[in-house]
Image (tube, rainbow, N blue to C red):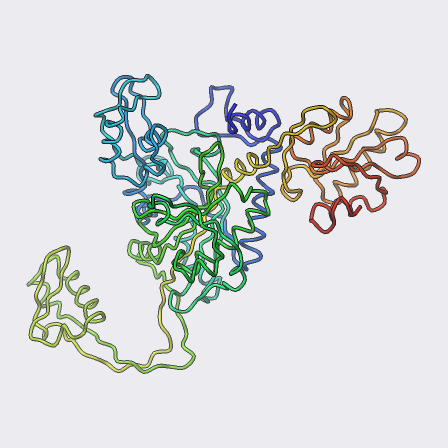
Amino acid sequence: MSEGERLTELAKRRGFYFPAAGAYGGAAGFWTYGPQGAALKSNVEDAWRDRFVLQEGHQEISAPDVMPEAVFEASGHLDGFDDMIIECGECGATHRADHIVEDNTDIEEAESLPNEDVMDIIADHDIACPSCNASLAGEPVDNFNLMFATNIGPGTSSPGYLRPETAQGIFVEFPQLSEYARNQLPFGVAQIGKAYRNEISPRKSLVRVREFTQAELEHFVDPEEDEPPLADVEDVTLPLYSGESQQAADGGVEQLTVGEAVDEGVVTSDWVAYYLGVARDWYERIGIDMDRFRFRQHLPGELAHYAADCWDAEAEIDGDWIEITGFAYRGDYDLQKHAEHSGEDYTVFKQYDEPVTVERPTVDPDMSYLGPEFGGDAQSVADALEALAERDPEAFEGEDVTVEVDGEAYTVPVEETDFSVETVTENGEHVRPHVVEPSFGVGRLIYTMLAHAYTEDEVDGEERTYLDLPPEQAPTTVGVFPLMDKDGMAEYAREIASALREAGHSVTYDDSGAIGRRYRRQDEIGTPYCVTVDYESVEEDTVTVRERDSTEQKRVSIDGLAETIARLTEGETTFDDL
């Protein structure tokens, strides 16, 4: 049984996650989080919010899952949010072409290859259809848009889409959000919410799904002035798999501190480097095995249309590397596109310390000349003249000036442009921020945490399975058991369970079966501590506290038990110190 299969079996049996709508045959790519999974998911989101929102001083919003078509037309998702698809000519089954190549060859990142190259590779290796085993050689590889379409309101006059990423809900609201930040850069806006992608071939349970939760941060910065606090993370060691190493015959993961990675130019963006350092320590905090972890740089063919540089945090499971987070420097692409399509101002006004006197080239084209001369293109020519005056005022020194609109050149007499250079006093300037984006896949984080926490050992000659989850992340903090359901032990145990719940702990009460079996049930869901009530408890107000990993037990007073559990969970004390 593979690591993933073993994990899926445990997840279903113990209530972490399972296929949704099973009574009706289910639908691939949709999963329901059970009681343990929902609690674990909540804990992961709280830990993310604590580190990337509260500690960083950022804002958090919650935008709609459905947005109008115009939003995604501006963002580029309608035209460029595609995966490669290939259809079997024999059985008609559709598959994701790059995944088929990766599954049947030594190529690791087929997604970065052109469609034609993927088609050639399928033919060269005579790759067969996974559904019917017919050859896929010669079948075309096409693009498939992953957006889920819908209609807003009755009829079809208001098309909309389920968001494929939470980021656009932040970008489109930037003018309002910048006001809340008092137009002071830098500032960050975070969001935890659902995203939807109509995956061609969902697989690997929570890894490749059609509905998933993202935790995204969009950090808006002035590219000319704002710098990250690199000193806070400069000594954090990062396992970096750079683009250069990926393309070298003997390349591999290199261990560099954040400071070294920046100084040597391995990570080109200081802001991305900062968040790699912050995230690396956070991954360890939530229980990801750092021996099965790396940061991989995107190759040129993989880079999204908006990204100047991008690194993925990847975790190893079943010998495969799974992306769990993307770190991208998106520049001003998103804000510029929404400004162009909406006509709204997507800039921040930056006040100067003192007024500045500058020379400002201006034009005021004579539309009575441009209109008859250029017809419907007159306004576009006027806009191009204005942009040229700002960019290259020397172009207006001759008798004529030429601008280009949609690939066609237009020549205008300079005297008809009313070009001049004015001396003006400015109190500030409008700055379009650049965006740094750490984007976390919550489901993939949970899948990785469970896979890395899964542990088997032997206790008293008996095989045991337990989840080595950090106490902070465990879905249940403490299990409370009466040794037997008699002589007042059960009532006493219920009182303790109630008191622990009132103190804010997640508690499971269990009086069913042998005490050893009850311990094993809690071990399998990662409960770090178990409290057992016995005869001595009733007589002396003490209980036995058992620690999950070592299975050691210690006698602890009931007085202050809730505080003791809290200090253990938060790492303020250790079990050995009790």
